[in-house]
Every structure is written in structure tokens, then in C-alpha cells.
Amino acid sequence: MKIICTGLNYVRHIEEFSNPVPENPVFFLKPETALLRKNRPFFYPDFSKNIHYEAELVLKIGKTGKSISEKFASRYIDSVGLGVDFTARDIQEKCRKNGLPWEICKSFDCSAPISSTFIPFDDFDSGAGIDFHLDINGKTVQNGNSTDLLFSFAKIISYVSQFITLKIGDLIFTGTPEGVGAVKIGDRLKGYIGQKLMLNFEVR
Ligand code: MG
Image (cartoon, rainbow, N blue to C red; front, side, top):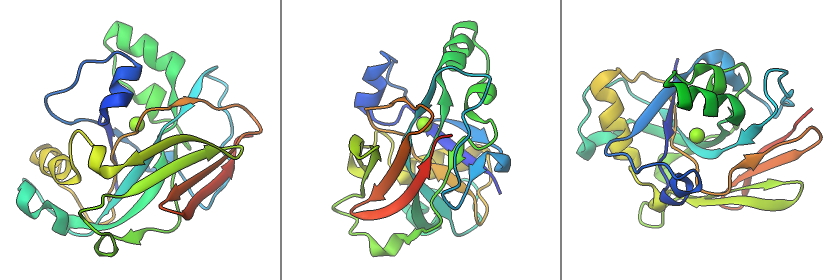
């Protein structure tokens, strides 16, 4: 399986870093070794001094497909979970400045904590969008709704599948809303979809 991550997909998050608004979805990959499951603690890595949380809705792909049209893209979504796209922001700034790829700042081991539970996509009311939020030490730091996505789930699936075949079990991180920030050792992160607790882990 593979993990596809969408960047720059909520306008107010793009503004946080004064990035230009992209014309098409921007995506990158994380390897399977990035997954951190079952609310295991995240161990702060030695190579960074500025690890940021990015809470994101995560789509689980339920059907293999290539060059999927936007119209049929929702049929490829099995279920929706919650994940964190941990980012070594200090390293990312260096990569950006030098025009280098993002693997060392985004794709390191355990950089993708993921909920054990995934909610069937059909359970959501498509009109209302999907609400999610992240609390750190009991305080809400990020709040998002899928209706605020710059590129919809369908657009992401359609665009990515022009280049890369999607397979059953692949995960797509759909981007983070505004409010990203640094974590420190001892922080407890709790992520919710609606009022349902999806993620609950500690930084050590
Ligand atoms: Mg992200």
C-alpha cells in the first residue's frame, strides 16, 4: 500500500505560510514505515528541532483505479479516518529554499499517526461535509471541514490517478487546515471526526 499526501489544500493554511494557491492538487508520498498505529507514542526525532502537527482527514481507497473521472471518484472511497502529517518544518524550509524534494522532512518513520477506526464514507451526509478537529493538551488547535477543501476528495482522486494507479487499501491524506504548530515532548494529541475520538497519543 502507499500513502499519498495532499499539501496546500485549505486556503487559510496556505496563507499561514504565504504560499501561492496551486492550480492543481500538490501531492507527495510517505512510505508504509511512516505509519504510526494504535495510538502508540510519537518519539521526537533527533534530526529536527521544529516538528509540526498537521491534522488531516484520510481517505481509504476501496477499489483499484487509474485515470478516474471526478464524477465517479467517490465510488473509490471506502472510508474516512484521521491522521497527522508530522512535518519537520525546519528541514522543510531548507528543502524549499534549495528546491529539494520533501522526503526527509515529511516521510520519516512514524510521521503519519493514523486512526485505527475508519468510518464508512456512506455514513456521512455529503452536503454537510466532514468536521474534524485536533486538541493538544485539552485545547483545540485546529478545526476543519471538508467543504473548505481547495481541491475536493473527487478532484484529488481524479488528479492523482492520472499519474499513479490507486489500489485497495491506499491512504490519501487530504491536507490540513490553518492552526498548524510545533509539538513538544509530553504533549497529548487528541483528534476527532465530529465528536468521535479517533486519535489519542503522546509525544515522547
Ligand atoms: Mg499536510
